[in-house]
Amino acid sequence: MEAMTISGNPALPSSLGASVEGLECGTLEHILDHGLNMATWRRSPVPELCQELTHLDREWAVTIRLNTAVTNVDVTLTRALCSAGLNAAALARWIADMSGLVGVFAGIAGKSSLQPRLEAMDDTMCPRFHVDRNDLRLLCAYRGPATQWLTNSQVDRQALASGRPNEDVMRVGPAQRLEPFWVGIMKGNRFPGNNGSGLVHRSPPVENLAETRILFCLDA
Picture 1 (cartoon, rainbow, N blue to C red):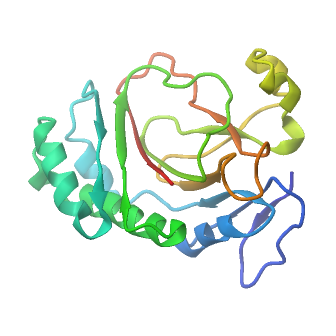
Picture 2: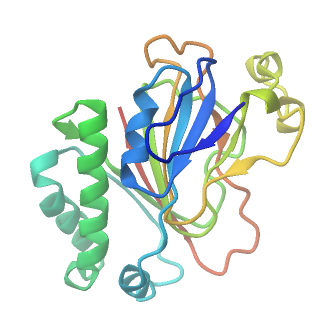
């Protein structure tokens, strides 16, 4: 699978399953282009936001599922974090960052409301390589290891379809991976014209984490 770095107006690939990455938020918009399966915004951690997250209990574990209008997402997230036992007033930058990602994803997916999901976990959520049955998914890990994914050339889709072990699904390694604070948008099997070609990915193996892994997810 071809991977490219965005600069200016790139020539996009014609084959299904390619990926694109860049240092600007606008890179994510290319996920709608034919042939792309993964678009990654390789953003750097924000020091002030990282400082906020250090105040979270290392063992804080929760799953928050929401349904919110894009115009009201900051209020919805604030209430949800308060209900989860956090001081939302001390997490203003984090709330603003998640709200911003909701706005970006809603614009790309053409949605006026979304269902954000925030997972703080101390184990591996989805250890098997799989494909999502949706159109698009945005992922951002704020703490701990981030999502792993495979290029088309790495995947044995017949092994995947038959439920064989990860070692058989991944023909060659290592897996690609997002880094903390990077934002990835991937295509699932339901994206128009992408049936059977959705991005193959999994949650990263979690071994002896000193603190919970925090993942923000949006689906369309």
